[in-house]
Amino acid sequence: ITSTNKEIEKHYSKKKMWLFILLFLSSNNFQYHFVHGWHTNNYPAKNTFRKKDTTCCHDVVKDDAQLASSPSLQDDDDSSKVLFDDFVEFLQMKQTQIITELEEMDGSGQTFCNDAWGVYSDDNTQNLESGGRTRVIQGGDVIEKGACSLTLIRNGILSEERAATIRGRQSADVPIQGGDLYHAAALSIVLHSRSPLVPTFRSDVRIFWVNGNSSSSDGSSSSSSSLAWFGGGADLTPYYLEEDDIGSFHRMYANLAKSYPDLEERGLTYQSMKKSCDEYFYLPARSEHRGTGGIFFDDLEASPSSMDFVKNVANAWVPSWKPIVEKHRQVEYTDQQRQWQLLRRGRYLEFNLLYDRGVKFGLASANPRVEGVMVSAPPLIAWEYCHDIVE
Image (cartoon, rainbow, N blue to C red; front, side):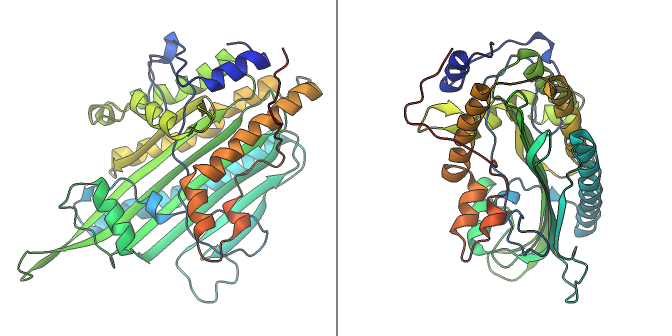
């Protein structure tokens, strides 16, 4: 891989470009890894929920249809509740920890705003159980714009449309129907770098738990089941390709995946997660992948083991990106390189607006909160008609 504009364009324009990276036999940290090599990857968009702003006009929208993306039966409601509450507590802690790490890494003195709403608001006079915290930094030295968003929904009512979507992804006997209660939580990050030599980073983890009900064919009896599952991922969008950087990023998640043989036995491998990522972050109109990918997974049965894996995916986010930042942050770049970054960001926004499920859902909603829906958009972009790539 070289960092010339010409070859970068060739890389992004090819559907498959396999780079055989020998050290990849790794494990999994929420969305990527395993030997064989990787080509520009893609990964399903973030999920979206509707929320309310209170302190800054940046917040994310997360969609229950996407959070509900991998159901599995649990023994009882109590075990699912314990697992769900444990994971929510982890997400709250992780958001605070990540914010601290990123502000220290950036070093500019810029800080993340705190847009808390619902249950996280200081004036939760209605005793709401759902809510979120959207944290946004802008104008940093390393991070030109970044968002780290937490969303929590408790006791939501599943619509029949969403229930049908879930049933369609699962076996016909999954006891989920409109009117069932659901609970969901997610933490997502997008970090747009100032330097064109530092790649953009995106990631998320999520849990969805449904209290389902089923009835016998004659309606004489009914039973309830608790179903819960995880989803998530992480991916990289560089502007100039550095084999060592991309290799180390993928290797971290590959090694993580390999450290959970029980999940690999169930088909959750670095290879499968990378493939899912590749298939999602793709712009068919241009026959281009959005970046060099990473991992993505859905339909992961909620259990203590799978939750441990998902937590470690989130734990790997900053360690997988920070070494690349430190390697390139002080390297000078040209105006031409900056312009190339803005052009590639145009592709990033094209994907968000044309293909990202969360963005499309949010903008199609009645009275959409556009600031929240667009929080993942780059701060500056460029389009040029028939751009001529300069060597």
